[in-house]
Length: 453
Image (cartoon, rainbow, N blue to C red):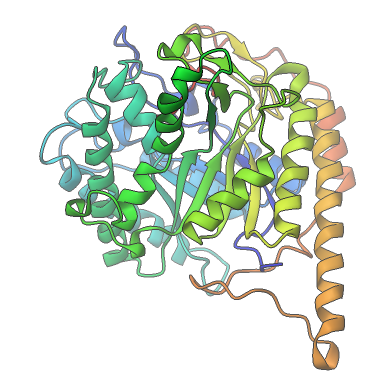
């Protein structure tokens, strides 16, 4: 079993999209969920629940309101809160939303993203140096979240800004160029920075009733790998790809990530886990690692309403099965970790561990999901201890070692702190201090309604 890259196997992710809707209204999920306002409480909750790693986001539209002028006031509370709670964060630099003065199709987009990424590296690097942890842990970044989905939704079908139609391949290449330029800029400031490349992990199959759709299904399935192949330099090498641009691969996996292909994407038939054509997540992770040979993280996963707890149990079991079979799966990120309204209709999406905050920042917890989290944490810890015991018995002198990580020395998670029973109990049973905030006028997002391509 490889030593872990993160201080706990299970992480919590704060949805952080900041894109514009077709109406022109901008989504700002961090503001909508009040995560920036109650960041200290949110990160304290993560730690109390044993989630010592997280995904969070920097909002480019707020940071660079004027071209070339960077102001990180909007992110200071989140960065300080994570540092105070000693939670390791992977920071998204671009989660769909760009400033209004940035054109992702323009020739200068990669350079503009690189300038922004460099400014982020300076800001986060200074924060890391101020941390009481020495030597400071590496700064972790996700340069651009889900290049494949961004290109499909923003360039192919006009669902997200910039609302392009039939320009998905062009947008995907632009995003890859931007990631490459951004990583170079970050490494110029922070040579030890680590990167997550979060992409949808999907399975697309032809409908047995439409065998003529098989070529289209295969093309759609294979499209999920194009962005990573471009970063490696194996596809469109003129973009500048190279193996040094592919670090940890994030597999974003939701209940709707497997479907029967249809030429009209709105007519896709989603395959539920009990469908005979559904493929186990462990098999998909095994194939992903075999293709790229990189460490993996289930970087997003979650479901809504009563499906939340059983979905986490299923995903955790599959991820741990893959890890037991030798696949370097370094964690599972519960995403999102707090509820938020939907991208399209502002409906209240019950898909997180915690709900909207009240006026004092208290967030009611979803008891079944918390119970499921506790169970899978115990399951993971037991697997880690068993593997360590086997390794110790097999080595001369009884010294246990883990698989070496080519990217650098990670920290071990087999003995990561488990949820404190009293703290977690307080999170579950503490009565709300007041009415929840009125969030009807805030724009929010959901991980539902997503596709890939």
